[in-house]
Length: 280
Image 1 (spheres, one colour):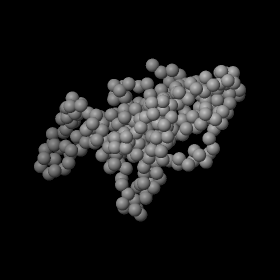
Image 2 (cartoon, rainbow, N blue to C red):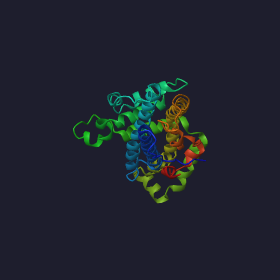
Image 3 (tube, rainbow, N blue to C red):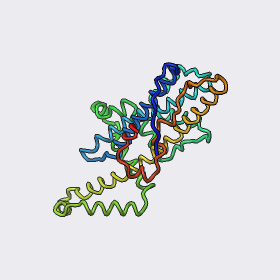
Image 4 (cartoon, rainbow, N blue to C red):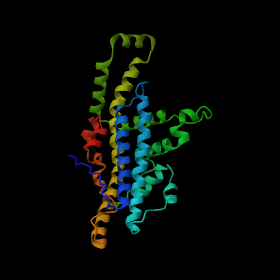
């Protein structure tokens, strides 16, 4: 299903090729790690740390892959010269601006609808990438109690994903799992004393399923970016073989790196290990 990634370190290759290759490897590893943490996470004490890890890795991966597209696009339009460091730094960690910039490069001229759930997911990652309101929320909140907890924000997003993406059959399957995992004695204690045990089991089992549907949305959000990178690779090859007549491209074939993009929905909805794709 997947081809191998071949790392090129031949001295004859341009330095730009090696640098872009290394950046693609970094972006891919960050995204795959984020995927894996995301599907394993939950809102109990043991699982919430995985959400933080997922958000860290996803924000890094999104930022890196989008800046990769912007740099490579500039190169094929400017005689393979990269943009200035100042231009790249100007984007900061604004993932929404980066995402919209990449959409402008897409052949189909895609637009991210401001009112959509997908927009909210990208906006959430943008906010988490911000050191004060996202990555360092727990520390910043000591001096600013008005900040919004990213874990609570993400749970609201997951609730919306469940409302929009889960079929009646899937919801019935979650209910069946809940009944299977309920311990009668604790259920009785909850009914008598209102311990919240039943709600906790429902929340846990529901989250396990919805995580995968959220990941499917995230992978679809990345498709336009990988599409842009693929088209840039093709243009680079065409230009360098017809104009400069060289066998050492300035830009790698990005299709070889982001293999997760070829995963179909049924596989995404059941797959738990994603970092395995790093070693194919």
